[in-house]
Image (cartoon, rainbow over all chains, first blue to last red; front, side, top):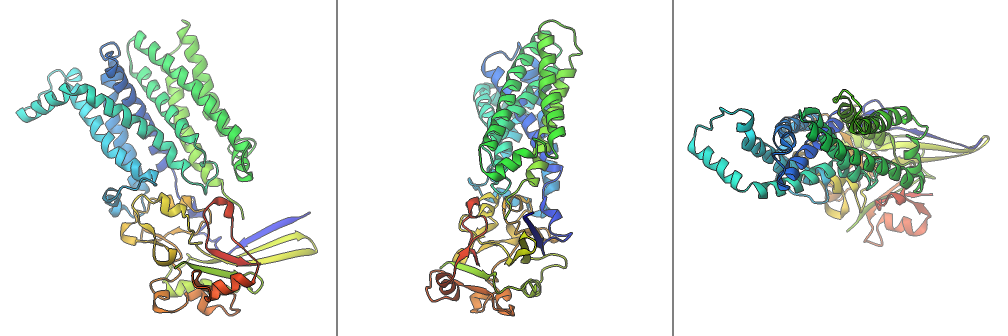
Length: 313
Length: 178
């Protein structure tokens, strides 16, 4: 049998194992960032459409989660850094070639926007809230008068945040599994889908739940299409891409991916949502919880499997 | 100016002298390395072929690590040598994930470290990189590709060579004589 045997002096416990440089921090952040992007997108969308009163959870209540989601995500990112005290270096330069750089700047825009959005709606949640200082009342009035402008800015930046979480991975040609431009749209769709699921989970109105369940159903459909499309692309590409796809088609990630992401994260919640929209009684927390679970599993599996895929030479 | 290195796989015996010289010269922490030896045995017994390579950062012309770096810490220095500015590196790991040659590692002090071609400590003083200067079989050639009389230009004109995974699109500048 023809064989190739490679012995490398780099295979020692300090070098080769740590080249799987990203652990739980990055996929957790990608999930939280995508979820926050989804919630903020729908908040901006219903506000622009003038339906904020019809869908109050989407417009007002759910966005209160986003500063916490973003803060938690940023904490995970910070913990991931090896040279922590130099994190501010991200903000001394803008490098358009590096998705991580413009992602950092996008967060710099989105995080304050999420806080402004909460401040604008805080009196709806806490009716006796008092800003105390006249300047804060004036600031609130200023933002309220420009609500439509803020909504548009938030709509655009939430989309950038959602798509960047995928592009971050797809920019690495050294990891063939990540090196597909489908990953940006896929993570964006998944982020919007988890955002819609969070709104369904929090909403107490049947009409709002049904509206976002329908949106979620459409997004799940797009996600399934993108996943199939991604594998078609891999299998029609070079040997390293074929091997990357095989991680999920018989390889070590097959069971976790098709079971946790594809079945429990996409197909089962889609069936449950269809049944619920047709009038069957279901525990209404079940489908959105599965969507959120699928979203987090997708990030974790893609992060770990991507680092297992590589060029061989 | 375009610095490059050629490795003669026919002369290299895999003694790891280049590895130790680099660790000493660049004070690489114990257990880490910026260059390493790879032995590839290929064929059907008893017809086996062995190729021994001294590998390090390829100082690519189209470096994914420079492209992915969010702070500009990874950059092209004189002669296309890829360096990391320690004080600008946040240790995010993007460059490590982006390198198809796995040439980088996280230094225990936090920043990301890799081969520098000994640019500042030796080459700019007119010396060869540490690995080249100690090689007992003289299988490493270093120099400026823009200078037709540099050792690396001369040997690349004379001999057949290959680069590692050129299909990754990185335009590597570490040449292997075959």
